Image (cartoon, rainbow, N blue to C red; front, top):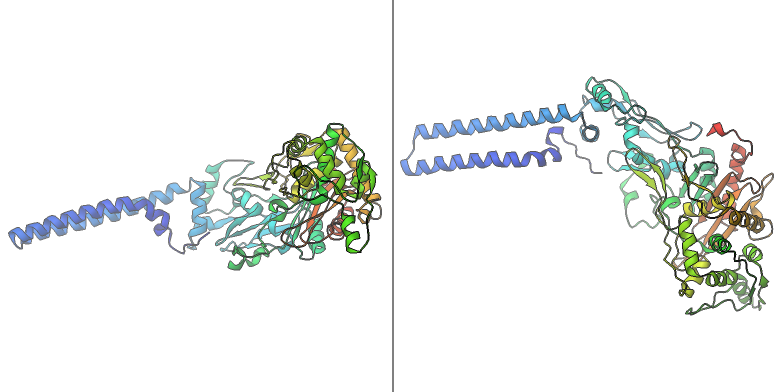
Length: 535
């Protein structure tokens, strides 16, 4: 947003509106003077003609000035009947007697009432963000030069006092402004938990990536963390440079697109289970080659053995449960091709992979994710289907999509619309898949932690169900994923963690999820009998 340090009556918007009137007036003035000049050239100097020209000139000046003053008066007096005018006055009018400056922006707090954003009580109304980097992307910022972002942008009108969803009477708001009464915007309570968000911030240690935690009872976002972050108290031009590879302003939790790697095998298994497909496949060391593919898809152990100078013999025959725990690429590539690309795409569509999720429909704008990039698949596209079945190829997802997928597995297939503000009522959406499918997925996810690649996720008093993932990255080292839910026996939260270029998900993303889960246990989110009223 560009700041114009000008008085209100000479703002660019006013000049644009007044330009046609001024153009007409000065056009008439030019004609009068032209007539006067012609008379002078024909009749010679005439005191009477010149005097008449001067009188017309000053009359037109008086009319123009009166028109400007009248326009200015009506513009300001009737302007307070419009929220957009009040917002214009707040941003552009820097005079100390500006009545809009007595409007105090509402606070933003976390799910437990802890302060996330507040405005100063002086005439500047400067916004202060006490949690700085921890809540930067979700809360956003409100700045006279750089504009709005996050929940500050989505609920700008409500926070500013320009609307009141409880008592939507703009007449009262207008009267309060004109009478120069102190007008306070409404406070916003977010669903985020500061303790969990801070745990995510500390566990990520500045590494690029994201952490998403969802409350399975109503879809509330408990954590929506993106790294690297920024300090909304210290905005500067360098933050907004497009060539910054770190992209600190990008909310990776909602808008970061990544290949999901082996964590996507959860959806492939769901698609197969939905049609009753639970085959046992042989997994030879040479892997699986789909029709039209240039290279076979092999398991990670093949490459590890090759680097060590050894020969790997393959896993041999595997059931779906065993293949999921071992994260066999060979098995899942063949499984995807066997059931067909059309079935895989249909379940991906049902599971919200092809849609952008709205997490908040605010008074001024919406806040949400981008859609995952999932190419339409048909059965003949075997090579593409095989790649996507191991979470590679043209497939890109956001952490929010993966958290929702994991949550559906732990919640009997049921899904809530994700939300980030408590004044928005919880809303169910269509189930991702059937309850029997969800139950089998939950069992496999628990097995993947108890005896598979996610062994380190469990901690004292809590058993976790999850799936690790290591996604090939064409721009550097592999990305590390860990998705799941906890506690395994009675799920309360679902999560997705990605660490960019973190390598194995079990070594990078899993410890982050474990740290946040421990914070959730301390805060009572994993308690089976937790008081629902605390939300």
